[in-house]
Image: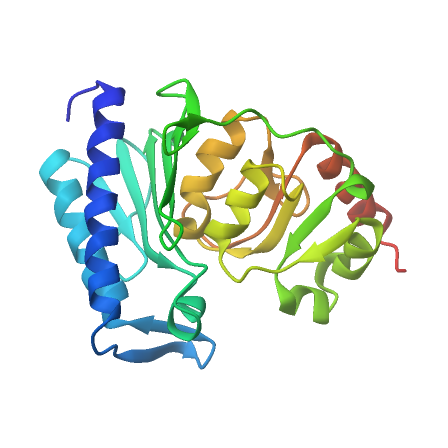
Length: 263
């Protein structure tokens, strides 16, 4: 693959736009829905076919790279050495099945463990969020995004995973209580778009590599912190309880975790 990252960004954007066209066309036809780990963890024939399409395009662009895909059509990775593409063909599959809305397509590109480019495509609104350090900015389609305001926890809304709040995992009820309010979108990609745009100041959920890879690249570039719930760097090859937050909100949340307090 050429090291012309601007060209890579254009090529990946074109690939994702064609993927969107195919997904929307297939939504009008029959959808096969299967359970993975349970009734709330779904996969469809469209998830699978879109991952195959995206990975084929990536292989054509970058034949020697490794690819990690949610549905298993990529490689088995043991490290992030070299260039690694991390793909989520349909993020928010429950929303995709039940709402035909509020889902995303995501690709993150890492070089020796360092995020270079991230892409989150809000499919139904036809807005592609893309960028990172390799291209010196983050864009929503053709409009460059500024860094979101560095708000404290009390000053903004927090995105959350519902089960974490219900079960009060990692003091989520205290975190929500101390924020200005909670929002739940049901898709990591849509959640991270809201953080990128400053509509929420953070997001907390259990996430797998393909859930966070694209967003982490763009969020970090714009000064948003991405870590484990106790402030440690993520292991990008495993599941993590992930804290995405502005610098000030991260500090507030880590203090709640350290104090081990209740409401």
